[in-house]
Length: 406
Image 1 (cartoon, rainbow, N blue to C red):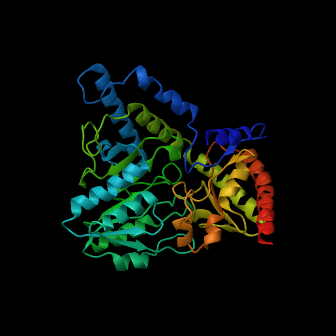
Image 2: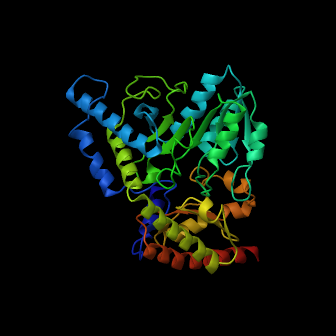
Image 3: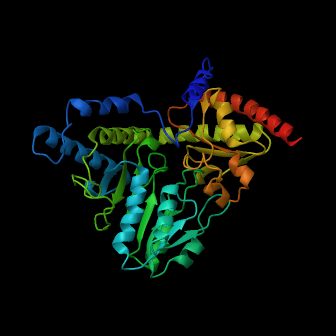
């Protein structure tokens, strides 16, 4: 196995250009973020933030300062509302399980959109085995939730509603304010959670305007380090811990805080919001150039998700008929273009993406999709290169597909 992987890596030698577009699954960390983190491994604030000595006090001050900066980016009132965790998956698990355990005496219904991340969908399946009732709100062909169905489903037995602000696979921006208003009008005590990982640093989100109870944030999706994320918990909202152990500055998550990664997350946030409008306009131009270029140059293509202002500025997801997505990722990789097929959580399974089937894509269309995300660091030349590489790769695979059908 190792030898075959080495051969695959060797096959990439001499590629003309490398363009990394698989931000959904991992991302290169900018040099500024790495430089910000390095001192916290062995020079300063390397102590346990709960201990009474200089390195511990430095760590405590660093974590609180990082939380204050991040609170400002989302409009949180108190830095203690920002809870650092190992990542988006852990934050979503804490949000869903923590609410369910805390509110189980008040009701047992949980409502989610049918295109939520698998870290929410799978947790809900687990809760169904333990007596909770989970309702999934359908979406239309662009991935927008059905607000009328949401209004119908919310009742006095509902304890939690979870709808992501931006879908991680197809970039649909949900009408979260409308959904929140519907839920709170029915029953103000219902906890409303949103995963903003694919919105944070790419579209404006202000808790003063959209006062959700819980919000998940990912680090690596804004080019921060892996292994760190956050869950915003409004100060008057109570949820249960789902793990036990030594409690430090993070009351909802046990263990010694990872100060270097928290610093990296904070620095990545700072860079994401610096020159915000300029960066977003740049990403939007590259996104549309990539979408239009593919749809205009290659027949039998389908854009997954909405076009324009209802779509996250970084997201491109396209299905190629008569072309298998996983094979296309390999073809493109050999040319130095790195993308993903479907979502990271499902690409090695035979099942198609639950998001793509929810918006009406057939099995083969879902399996023929690739997901690409642009960043502020990508250039026009990068996109031109991608647009030159993709048509030939698709044509080659379609020829193979055609010959197999003969």
